[in-house]
Image 1 (cartoon, one colour):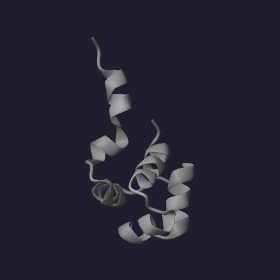
Image 2: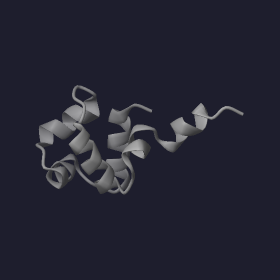
Image 3: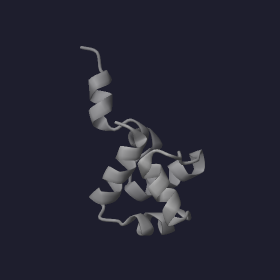
Image 4: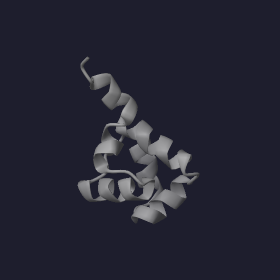
Length: 74
């Protein structure tokens, strides 16, 4: 799964608006929108903050379980 989709999915899962998320990580609403469109990528610092807001690690945010499961070799 792409990071842009995972940010949006996690934000919706915890019932946050883009504006709420922007405020939580200290960026503008347009920055969150750009992340979710895939036009920008969060910095390492913001990625860490996003993961914290979502209650997950940076690795889990970058590689959701569905993606990690598909990478496991039987």
